[in-house]
Length: 439
Image 1 (cartoon, rainbow, N blue to C red):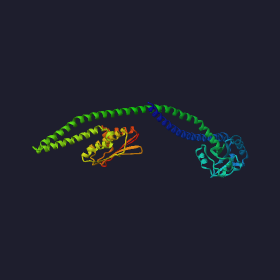
Image 2: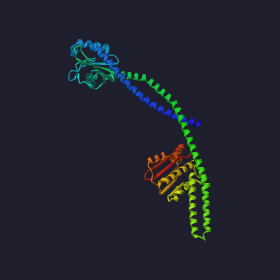
Image 3: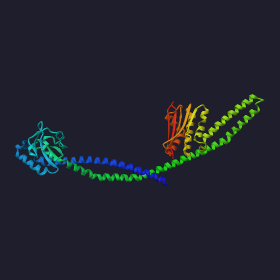
Image 4: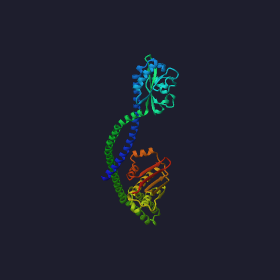
């Protein structure tokens, strides 16, 4: 139980760490989105400020006299009083009013009087404002001559919006706003939403970790139940194999062995009197002995020998013996100094038995090689044949028809941290490789 709790705790800690990383990434993305939204809202606020100044403060006091620039002192003074008294205050630092009717824009009013009467090409933002009749914001370009007086004011945002004189002449109002003010507004906006984002992410993490703990415990219990049921199935299978092997060994094998000896004795007694019958009896005795060897090999395949006593090499050699009797060349390579835990030897033997059974039934192989090797704290078994091979579809069909031997071995290998891999292709033979860690 304590082991299970430790395993669950590790899984939950791993999940919590992964959740923290994901939430951190989501938080970073959220902050970037909030900053972008804050900048957008700050620029929108700068546009609203310009709209109020242009349409609510300056436009009602505009007349066509402003078109004459410094030639109409009264119009200039009237707008200058309004602009300097109500418009040019932090964050607005400069104001220009353009007449866009010519090929270039002509400044008919500026909070810096030396610009009045100058003509310059309108920039893309100003042209866009005239086209859509809405406020357009863009960064001020200090390299332009009309912005020369603003170079010492730092980074500015120019907001342009069309306005109309009382006589119906369209002009362009431009306000230069300090960018740091816009940035500060944006920062205040997204920082005000930051606690909400943080609380939402923390609440999500707080809900997920207990839920992950419950799910991990359920998954772990299910895995333990699966392992327990699988072990019971294996134990039941071993018990049944042992019973069948005992019945064959103590029954049919012993009886056939007795028949073989009886036939040999009878053949010896008839050797002088009836050589033909004696020869036939000796052939029958030899055939019976071959049957006894085959049955003993089958018994050994049904239930493995005492591997600790006989050794893994002897067990694998006995497994491959029926193939050799059928004319299949077999090579068994097991290091003489290899010492393995009993459970690992049993697993390797079972994998070899299942692979050889499949080779004998389906492969039509001419050469089979069994090799056991150990390196890097892991032991590997490789069974290679040069038979007909099979496709993944054929393997799936075999499983669907109840041939689950290799699948069960794969499950056992995974339970001890190992891996069973089967590589095969039609006409190219099959490689069964089982690799497990040494305890």
